[in-house]
Image 1: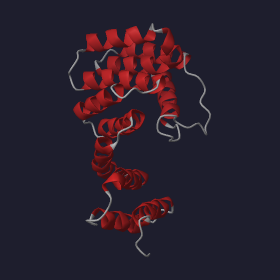
Image 2 (image 1 turned 90 degrees about the horizontal axis):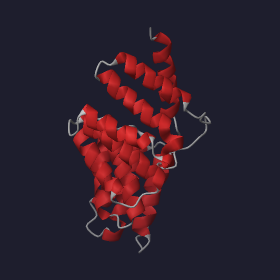
Image 3 (image 1 turned 30 degrees about the vertical axis):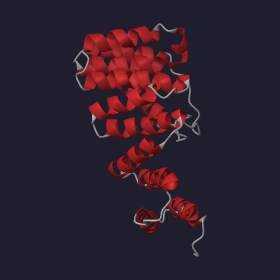
Image 4 (image 1 turned 135 degrees about the horizontal axis):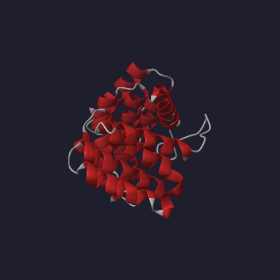
Length: 223
C-alpha cells in the first residue's frame, strides 16, 4: 500500500478487519509493524492500542490485552471512554484474581462521570473487590451492600446486590445465610433475552444467565 497521510489509519482498520476474520497472526503482524514505525502519528496510538487489545480479547488471551488497554486509558481524553476502558480492565484484573488492580480500575470508572448503570456496577464490584483484597471487612462490605439495596435507584439491580452478598456469606461459611440471599436474588431476577447485549461493553450477556443457572443449582442442592 502506498504511504499517504491516511496510511496509518487505514492500516489500523486493516488490522481490525483481519481480527474480525480471525486472522490473528496477520493482525498481530500488522499492529507490531505499526508500533515499530517511528513515523506513526501519536494521535492515532490510542486507536492502535484499542485495536490491538480487541485482537487479544477476541482470542481470550486476556493477559495480553491489559497493556494496550492501559495505554489506551492513559491516552484517552474523553471521560466516558475512560470509564468504559477502565471497566474492561477491572473485568480482566478480576478474572486474574488481581483484586487490588481491579479496585483501582473501578476508582477510575467512578471518577470518569459514567452513566448510572456503569456507576452502579462499579460501586457494587468495588465493594466486592475491596472485600476480596481485605481492604474492607465482611461487616463493612455487607453494610455498604445493604445500603445499596435500600436505594430506590437500585431497585432493578437488587438481584445483583443480593448475589454478591450471598457470595460473601458463602465464602465466610455462612451457608444458611448465603442460600437465603441466593433465593432472594433469584426472586428479584428479571428474565434476560438470550440475544441481550451488555450496554457497557457491547458484549453478549452470558454471565447473568450463568449466574442465574448457578444460583438455581446451588439452591436445588441445598438441604
